[in-house]
Amino acid sequence: MRSSTLRTIIAGCGLLLLLAGGLFPWRALPPPLTDTQQVQANLLGLAQAIEEMQPRNVVAYLAPEFAWRGLTRENISQNMGGFSLQWRDVDLNLAGVQVQLAGERATSSGTFTLRYRRRGAYEIQTRVGRFKVFWEKRDGQWLAVAAEGGESIEP
Image (cartoon, rainbow, N blue to C red):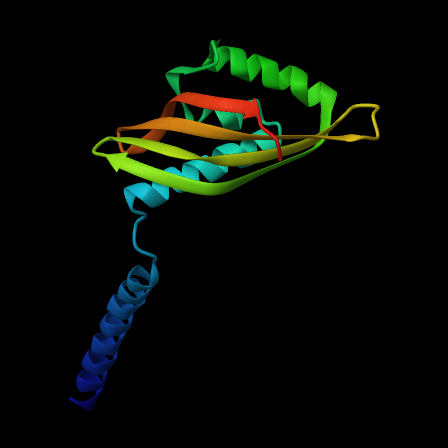
């Protein structure tokens, strides 16, 4: 009888450990991002993809109908391929970012500082400007549908 009681206690402890092992990691996971945080994260991911000159990663944040200054999503992807051959040491910083939500739509805005060096040049070029990116939530994902700005302003 002692042997079966011991087995029952061990089995019970094992079951408790399994439950605790599944419960504690679940409780330790961070809560899901709010819509505002998701838009901010996507904007930062988009900026990083631009900085790293990775057209495929840039396009991942853009809706199929994305437009900016007459350029489509496909134009941007193609142009980035050319820029990656011409530019090096690209550094893109965003500042004063604000996100405004309106249901399934959002607008992020702020200023940017873009620094880069043309291939074969020693001088670093700097562009400072304002931007606005318009987002829509589709199937749980926030995608950029349009953008404004990008003009250089006085630093």
